[in-house]
Amino acid sequence: MENDRSAIDTITGYYYQFDYYILKLLEQQNGSDSVCIEGIEDVDIKNVDETIAVQCKYYSKTEYNHSVIAKPIRLMLSHYAASSSISRSLQYKIYGYYSSGQEKLPSNIDLAFAKSKFFTYTEGKTKHEYHVDLGLTDTEIIDFLSHLSIDVYALDFTQQERKIIDKIKVLFSCNAFEAEHYYYNNALRVVKELSTKQNVTERTISKSEFLAKINNKNALFNLWFLKKKGIKIYCQSVKVQYFSPRNVSPFERFFLIECDNTTTEAELKSLLLNISKNWSKLSLRESKPFCPYVYLQNVSEPTLLNLKKALQSDDFYFWDGYDFKDADFCAKSLCRKATAHNNVKLKIINDIDQIDDILNSICTTRELYQFYITETYYTNNNYKHIKIQVEETMNISSII
Image (cartoon, rainbow, N blue to C red):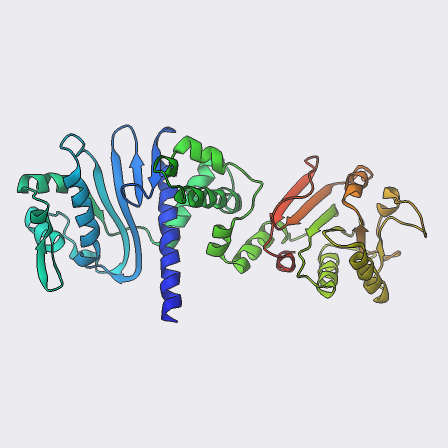
């Protein structure tokens, strides 16, 4: 259990660092300003005026003590000592969140305090004075301190993420859902890719390049985004955004569903029944009755036939566009109005090539909801077309 908690804390720390990296990119004033992940420090910020090397840590369960930041500061001091006098213009920053104890750190760090609390330490019962080991003079140490800033009042995990979402909403003129599930999701993907590059220059990106890379509303999640949010929260937020209207409008809705190889016929039948139940209105009082269309991607003909037989045995009425044995497919037949009299609760599309023909045979409002696991499999930009990525087929039950 202890190892599990430690692993969770480590992962949280990675996300916090990634979020800080994203936030710093979004906050840059100029498109040419750049940020590097895992450069001199966790995050290096470079603009026209200066370069700041930031050690970014999240200690949500740790009280602040000088020893917590002493080693990172010694590493910064070592980098300073190894730099030439000309290149010692670099700014260093400690940025960390702590559970408590921040008041222990004085507002001004003087020479004596730095030597005593940061540079002097004991290892193996041996006392070390790191500034002496590096051969630095007091003048050089004072110069280093003038380039060092320490912020122990960093934003907490949730506050930092919320600030990112607010920034994205402004930059892309979008709502909160789009900001989080499209642009922030893409931002996590881009940062994760950058962090794996071997070369420092490849781990660096300008603000303008970053915004161009995340400006994509086709993908809904990546693995890092999903692990951070959790599948339940993800499904709930998608449901709220697209599938929780107070009044369901009488539109022709198409549910295109990619089926994985672990979903059983019984589960698919249950999913079809849920879609029909939630997205049909067939009462006599309904002036414009309707029921949904469903297409199942990656389902074999025998499985589809078994599903139809199972629905039929339950006296569940559906159309599939075939009016009699050996008949050709007829889009017009499938597009007939479902009513309380014919009690047709679902329209099943057998082949993806039939979708365009069906859409062209309808005169009223059409909406498409494509659920996919890895890649989209159907393209049509003539109508409202929402593409929703899921981890597995049965996630859809939690969404619709």
